View 1 (cartoon, rainbow, N blue to C red):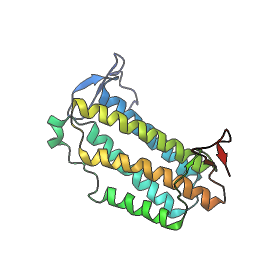
View 2 (cartoon, rainbow, N blue to C red):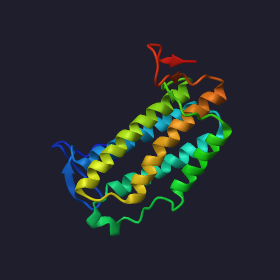
View 3 (cartoon, rainbow, N blue to C red):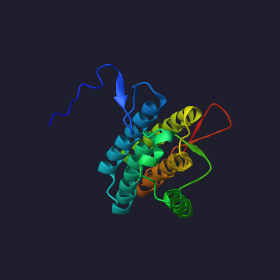
View 4 (tube, rainbow, N blue to C red):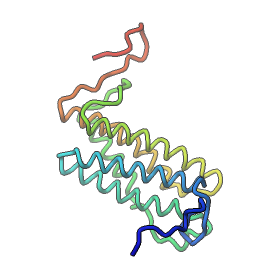
Length: 189
């Protein structure tokens, strides 16, 4: 079996339900960004040595694949797509966020993205996730996106921010704080 089909050579691609749309369609842009996010998470997983964090990131990757399937399905065809995010997906993320906060790795200051490699890629995941969220809301203006997906992606970007800070804490790397107000010296250590 060949990997290429030549069906997309004219700038069109297939979506769930058999319809073909432009590769610049809002649905394709949103799913492309979710796919990019999933790839960044794969990089983080290759750098993380903690089995619990790796399992959490794997679960997120699986949920993103499910979200992509949902997003690829126009609202009028959703009945043919049985895939759904787990009912507790947002609750799980919120519990993990609460655990990171309770551990003391979070503060109210803004931080410069970076630190160890895994944290730097988690910050990249956060920004890609935010872009995906904006694209999903743009798509939602054209064709309703399932609310569970919108909420999950919103919470996911918060999770990546917190996890980046936690990973830096785990590695003994300082989260460089940005001084919000003050003189020209904008960095605090």
